[in-house]
Image (cartoon, rainbow, N blue to C red):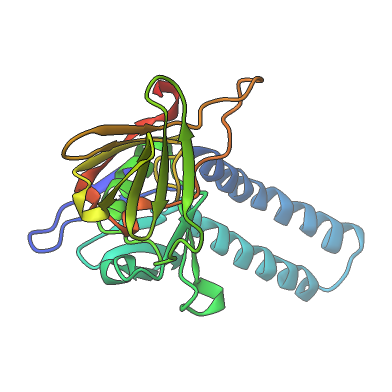
Length: 254
């Protein structure tokens, strides 16, 4: 449920909370008048206490209602500066595109984390409907660069069959061992890769196809006997390749 707003100089897009959370906030607001009335009957009519006690309770409830009401306004905003999250009514917390491309942010489970920010605003939770999430993430990931965490230990995969070979992924690139012969490809030699992952924006991948100048290599984790996806390959190739060289495919199609 997005609401685009056009401006001649700075076009913006606004996005609301996902429907379940949005409705929950609306239900809370609708219940507040009932709570206030119940407090009046209890404090003033039944207990016959001072009206100031009721007014104090009402003030606390009103502040709570004002806080909840902000979640019914657009929660996220995309503009030329970056991605923003509403903190309180007119106040926006901006995550600039420069920050996104700085290599300081990590992304996992619909959450962006920047450890260099103050503790109270170092996480950005993308609580969006699927369509809105795809729109936001497509713009975010076109600029996103993950933290540079070099591979301390190379990852080695055995590919069995008629063309059995051993593939090793490391900071230096791909090393292929086949019939006793070793061939090395630097990351700059990789033309294109296709990745399979249940969450296309999470770090790592489930399966992958590497397109090189002279051959195509497929790494496959697959499924276990119970039909569950086995643990993914724990490496984020976006730290080695440009985003246009990487395409994502839904895991169920692998």
